[in-house]
View (cartoon, rainbow, N blue to C red):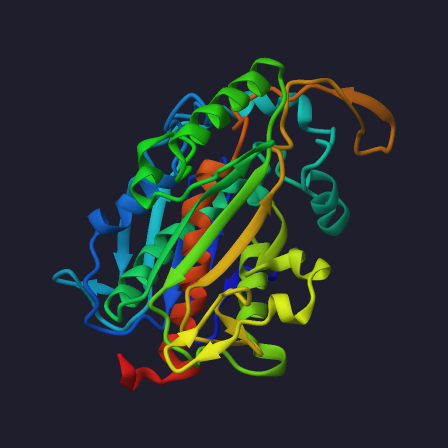
Length: 353
């Protein structure tokens, strides 16, 4: 299977399946001397793991990370860093009814059409558990960025039809939906639980903000920073749309409304989301992603089997009624990986580290 490697200088390759023995990532291009510990990585994995609250899947995985290579006495050595998380709470029997049936909205159908074989147990490689490797690598990327004053933070901007009206960054980790608006967070949670009770699911919007990134990140034409960010975020299985800055709202504006005018003190607005001509402006980089409703739901749906015969399916197993809260650390990680890749060689060269 191609498509498992991301990045040019800070390169990662994720591996493993949902119901296999383990999942993980190999990082190539991590510079030496970076403080790395299992505890540091675990902080981020705990934000992604299942079983956090009643609005996530009850699958009971601790997702404990193990560093297999690339560090010595708590610091990176410059050699490949390999990280592994064992799967411990699989219940593959709950997927027996899906052995020959495709789940609507899931990659079951397309994987089968491409490879002629698929792992029906939790989606195999198409499972959200693949993102463990991204978050583990992202923890190291975030450490590198923080050493240079660059911080990446994400939060639930919308779930279902409920929008966050205020942004209090201290509120994000205080509620199970990771919303920066306390009042909206309560309504988001109620709506998720209502959908769950009806055997259904909800989608939403995650906003990611990277602050402290200097002007000059990115390259013109094909290697634009915004293009790389869009590619990175669209590679997350549940994402169906990306917008940067004002995004699709620009379609209804005039240039006089949308242009970020400049003074000797800097830009007056940030409709561009911190990127012009594919290169960072030095303002906050602001990206939003559309997260689809979880495809595995209890409601009966029409589908076909592997012989293209009409049938129906009800999805058993343990699934998130809304994946938005757990997408937050994954989105942060993907943005951090892109910025680190530019930082380490595509922008200043490794001597900047």
